[in-house]
Length: 223
Image (cartoon, rainbow, N blue to C red; front, side, top):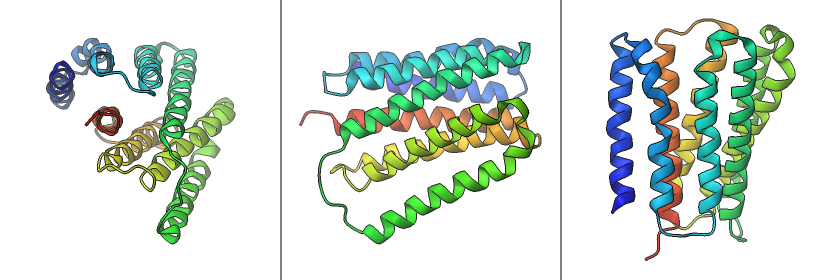
């Protein structure tokens, strides 16, 4: 199946990309970064038709745009802001995607569900309390972004109680990895430098996109 081949190629290319970063050749890795997400875009494009296919396609496209813009973040703050906006849109589209995938049903294990919601809110508040003193003019954009990505995680978490497929765990883990990637980036930029930050940011980001795409495709795969 073409989709499976493209997903496998994404894994192989991603491993190569991360190894290049680890060996210190980040300048060379810079040129490879724009070719990561297109593997997933093509994998979704080649997959059979399903109701939320176009939504997933749009979310990946905005992530890809964000990747390209952030490549020039060291050229000026405007590139970071534009990249932030692109990923903000991507996360909003992911939220729409998860909402569209949800089906009306009662949630089992309500205590666990509300504990999870509380944990997400607590993480958001702790993150912002640490970062806020250092955000300067970016305070409002970063607060909005943090709220949106936390909402994305919240709906992925809700989906783990709603979707009747083992792949629901892929989506939840992908959302957690996405929040981890953005959190590492934020701490590295606004709080203090993190060792191997590029590797940690990109490895969690690459994993996040893969798991979310894989989970959505498996949930929508016709039997």
